[in-house]
Image 1 (cartoon, helix red, strand yellow):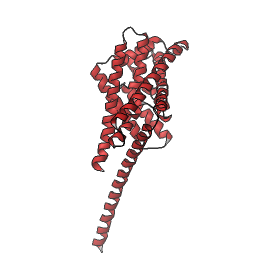
Image 2 (cartoon, helix red, strand yellow):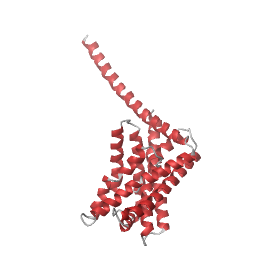
Image 3 (spheres, rainbow, N blue to C red):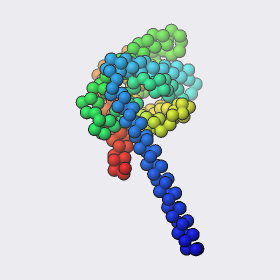
Image 4 (tube, rainbow, N blue to C red):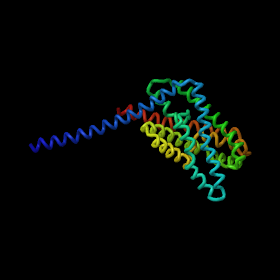
Length: 279
């Protein structure tokens, strides 16, 4: 009887262990399924609607830039320059919260999402390139429009000056190209991870906290996000004698490629391969 009881207890423990493993697999599958479903839904959006959504995202993400400029102008001369750039992490997330919660088409937030339907055989690579092109163009145009608008309004309201815009833009691109490129990979990696985490919960407050946490890390580290960086560098291009159009284009190209590698490969490909290898 004692032996039977011990065997039963061992069987029960093994059953509980197996149950926990199955639950873990189910959760991973659920997240992957949601991400693929989200990506597939984006592929079905018409180019015109997607382009307009991308322009809106470029405009909305500009509010992060507006706060960066205002904070820098407010604190200049009161605290150290390096401290100001670290404090950017407190206001940097606002534009991302507006865009992600509002479901506008932001390139870096959708990079890994759009990769998964291609890896899953549901979409072709050429379709992925088409959507990336539409979203990038819309984000860049929206960002440029916001920069032109806030560059006029900000100084009029004494929120910041054109010198502030120059300082921020020059700070973004003063790194060596290889440093900027690696930094952009980290930013893309974090944005891809953000989307994965967002698909693990439906609670609105939790989602906002996740956006704040991940994009705050990007802001604190000064990692190069192509869409916000587009606004920062274009704003400096307008008024700086040290930044030229070629500098702007080179930065944008490096940041976009780095973000793609971080989001599509480090997150999208690796997450899918984990599922494919184990489940």
